[in-house]
Length: 472
Image (tube, rainbow, N blue to C red):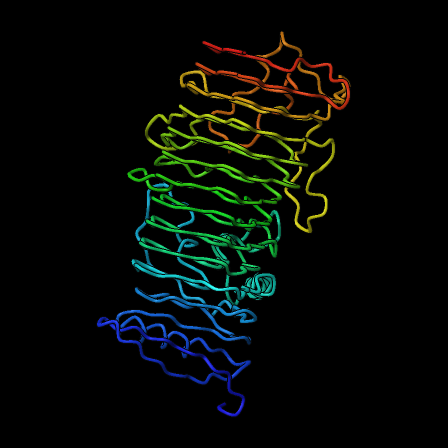
């Protein structure tokens, strides 16, 4: 084992700030899990410090990052995740009222629980080898060796609960992840639950190995900065979720990012039990995205308030804006209010924008014309105080009355879908080509320009059960 050595340099910084150094030789291609975990434990026990991975490949199963430890990947360093599900161990966390995928929140290549002052930095790569891992999980399910109780029989694929994420951090504080290339999770990419004081900067996230593969998920996190990240994902690009009715996503800034997705680029929900407050999203470029450029959803009782979205440029994107207030679950009435979207540009194609993806978002199963942006509450709960300013959206037009025709006198035939999964296609055919607004109070349109590439027989705006609509 020693003869095929790879040098792992470990720089230790003790509590007294005295720098130490040592070397540990690890063979490849055998699993390095126990050696790497021992080093992480040692560095943490001595007060924290940096573990540096020089150029080379490091094969490992699940690793737990501990307090005070930084993993630093030099250029050319590649951490390769095991393709055996037996190398991943579930991390126990508390069950939350809204967390229907609690098991999934504890399974990952790199995990952390109640750790603080932790970091992953450098210019190297962490690759979960997700396709091979997911297919192994699938095979073991069918042989009966490792049965997935939640197996998705419709898609003939293992469930999200059975597939490890790339990162899974729970209840951590002072987290910094910078510069690294992150590849090929078997499930979600970077998953953070109830973490605080985080910086995610300059990340290159490519997560298209399997279905339901999000890029970055923030669940009930506070004081988070996500900036200059490039995300390309088979499911939602950057997704804010809330599973804890007693918690919320609060004081989160997302800026200067580029996103491609076979679902939505930036999304709040669909898990929306607690809340989303004081969120700032700016300077985002969206490309080749099947669903919405921005989707903000409260359907489980979440309180959404004080949201600013500005300077967004979306090209080849299926839907510009989707705001939804529903009541799928939860014991309290949700709210969606005080949202400003400004300096927003979007181009909607006639065909599928994610055609080049190997795994494409599921197409709807009914005839339809192109979908407008939607701002929709429910009969006893209105969306309130929404400002849309300096909006430029180009739609494809080409609507046909022979395809699916909902005239204005049939507005009652547009279903409410109060307790359904939120998605811009959820209402079926809509009678507008630009904006459909329903059950809303205080919607302010300022300098909103809607363009058509071809004729569309529908009106650009339709308002149903709305109050205080202003158009300037």
